[in-house]
Every structure is written in C-alpha cells, then in structure tokens.
Image (cartoon, rainbow, N blue to C red; front, side, top):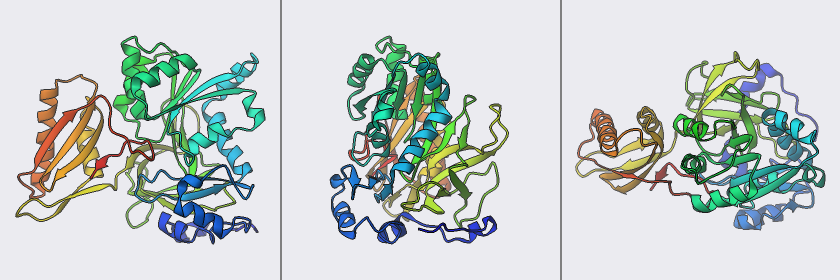
Length: 406
C-alpha cells in the first residue's frame, strides 16, 4: 500500500471513524488482500475462533465489548513489536537495564482477563523466543477471588506486577493486613479507571514500589504512560489524540472532552485514523517536573454510559455516568462504585470504600447528594439503595468492572 500523505493542516478535515463504520467495512479497511473475507466472516460469527495468526501473517484481537459492540483489529509482527517497545521504554527502562546487567530474567506477573481476544494478554503471552530469554511471565485470571490471586502472586514473587485497578484495591488491603507478602519494583495498571482513592491506597500498601498507569485501548494499547511524577503523557510519537466536544471540535487545555479521536501511527495493516473513542480526558499541557514535553492528560473515563428510568407519573430521564462521576468523585472515602437498575423507580449503588468514614454517614451523604441532583431535574420519589462490597462484579467476557448494570 502506498503511503497516504496528508498535509498536517488538513488532518482535522478528515471525517472521524467509528467502531460501527470500521467493523461494517472491515475488509475494505484492511490494507493487505491476504486477509480473506471468509476468515473475517468466521471471526464475526464466533470470536472464540481467534487463535494466533490469520493467514500466517497477522495477529488478531478484539475489543472487550464493554461499550456494547466488540471490534476486530489486525496487527502485523512489526506493529506488535512496536507496541511492546513503547511500554518497556516509557515505563520500565530503568528496571530492565538494571536487571539485564545482572543477567537475570525479570519476573513479571499479569493479573488480567486471560482471553484469546485480549490484547494485553496476547502481547505478554505471545513473546518471540528472544524476549523469553529476559522475561519470565506468569498469568493469573482476573476472575479468581482476591485470596487466590494473592497466594498465586506470592508464589511468583514478581518484580513487576500488572493488575486492573479493581484488583489492586483488595490486594492493597491484603498487603496492609500482612496477608500479601511481596515487594515488587513496579506496579502497573490499565484497562479501568485508576481513581485517586485506590492509587493512594496502593501507594500506602506498597511504599517502595513505583506505581505506573497505562492508558490504552485495543486500537492502540499504549496511548499514554505515567511518568515518575504521576502524570500521564500521550505517546505523541506513536499516536495522535484529539480531545473534542460533542460536535467534534477540539477543546481547550484544562477542559474535559466529551470523547477523543485517536490516530494510530504504526498500524499499517488496519489504519486507525481519527477513530472515535467515548473516553473523556483533560489535556493538562506540556510542562511537567519529569522534563517530558509530551502532552499530559487526566483520564475521566467512559462518561457516555447511561441508565434510563421512568418513575410512575413522571417523564423518562437518564442517569449518566458523567453526572455520577462528578458527584461521587467528591467523596474521598469511595474507592470504586457500580450502579444497578432495580426498577423504573429504584437503583442500587454498590460501594467499595477505604473505611475512612462510617458507612451510615457516607450512605446518607451520598443519598442526599443524588437526591438533590434528581430534584434539580424535577425527578421525585426515586428509591436509592446502597450496599457495601469488598469487590465489584465483573463482566464475564471482558473481566472488567462495568459502571452500570441494567
């Protein structure tokens, strides 16, 4: 395929792509004819058919489907290697150089969704032989109970531990109670919102570990990496991220976006150009104590999720993730939350807390704040239930914690 050369001043004039448009025209969006339509049809009918290579040329992954529509993405060996290199060079360079000088394999434990479609699992599992000389990977399925995960982690005694934030929270509690005895050099996290409450808890439990967050997606697995000063920096030499409002206009620095447009600069098999992702971010500028001039960002997460209700005798209304995030993020005692629709006039909030405030006081404060919001929208009589949990329920396919349960 010939290079597509677009003057940078005209880049924003390109129409954005969506998951629906890319998946409906999947074969046309691939740059190499060696991927046959019959192979694509098999994958569309049954994602479990994803096994290694397609046509002995390309690796295939799918999105988790947490947004309701899974997508299929193709990668060649060069792209695969570049994705690994970004994470290693931006996050772990110091540790890797230190360990390799000692000629010892680095122990790396991944607590993730062990699914064939999962890009993080595939990037770590399907290593070339050369990489296996330097890294020893152990995998633990994220669906195991925290106590089992903890015991398996202790057996691995990792130098690098990678977990979803919703797993790190109970592991940090086990560490503080003395039941988890490990001291990894690095703890990395991705795939879910890493709230300040959970991050502070992890830092308290693992004071000598370097905590690093990675923001990514199947479309590009390392959009941003956290620096030693706690700021996520976009890997702008590998991707382009536009923070835009609902109409697609770029927002100013410091303003939360409605979504982002992502352009992957390294995948030449399946070009991803101005691809719409329903994540809200805030661009923070280029000044950072670490010295990097890459754009800093704050991740607010997927705030387009909604639950619809129609209380008796009242108009239908929507409870959006954006408004819930604004209200509940103000409570420092809340580490994580999940909302389930019980009926048209009732929803339940599941809370995971750091126990810095009594449950009775916290429940009343949360209910009052939500009722004030609902009344401001002329919604009355909604029943709000609150239940405290040690951990939140996971989506069986993706392994992630879903914000809303319908």
